[in-house]
Figure 1 (cartoon, helix red, strand yellow):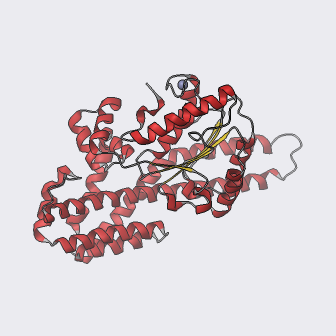
Figure 2 (cartoon, helix red, strand yellow; figure 1 turned 90 degrees about the horizontal axis):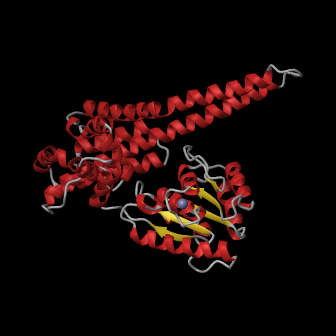
Figure 3 (cartoon, rainbow, N blue to C red; figure 1 turned 30 degrees about the vertical axis):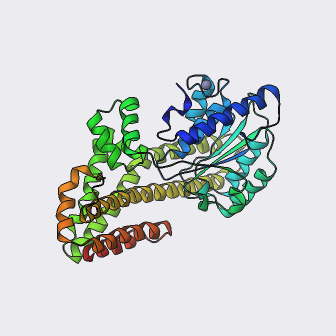
Length: 393
Ligand SMILES: [Zn+2]
């Protein structure tokens, strides 16, 4: 067993990380200078779901573990669950990582590690750092504390400023094969092999997505709803209403995923404020501070909700791209494996009734919608425009 077991289909990256962990152990045990295998800043890139943050977290654990990432000691368990005192990882559920949060991390990075090994700073969404935050980080990367290691994760190197990425060792994760994903679903999650094979294909190399599909009936139903869209585009009216359904479903999913947390955060904040405001020596300034804190929390929650719903919508668009890819595969007769094996007949019907050129235009329309959403276009507007293009082809 090792902390790297959960990295699916990433052997070259795991080899590099193991070499770094060995080199890092020498630095800790013999106080030698870091060798070329170990360095102070790492950048993990890879498509969504390839496991870049899983890799970074496993590396953090391996650096803290006396046995190089055994996977079962306290240090490993704490680092993997996000509770190790020498592994700082900011919450990454907001749209942006701001400069205050970055400064706090950099301050942590400058402290000596409490357990004598490494002070690890893990930024899972380095691509969401504001420019100010990036500049603050850059200073820390230029003059790293000897016991500090920065682990940054981003979809691609282009998502970071050249000044930052030139200071990092690059680790590029690849999209794992469907077979590798299916294998891990069977081995680790006890999923039945047929379901694992289906979910791995439908997940298109996104391990977390594949696991959700394999384990949750609700996720499979949501996917069915999304993939019903290509069949519901007869008229302009039905295309627009399909667009609204898609956007609403993403928003509902976001509410479902975030509301419990929102409520409990508000409850604990008002408990904390209530205790302070009614105490002896109450001066009347507390309520103003309280209102400010509540407003700040609401702002944070709103940003998290927006991001969650955007992620859900993006996932739906990935499913749709996969569907039209299947249609194109049939039209071109390439014989490639289908992404959505269970919807082969529907794809075949559309393949017979349309041309490969129109399918390519449809795929472009879905990709354009994803780009528009990334650029903060109002979701309904972007999805409506996509649905109309999908209708005409
Ligand atoms: Zn361990």
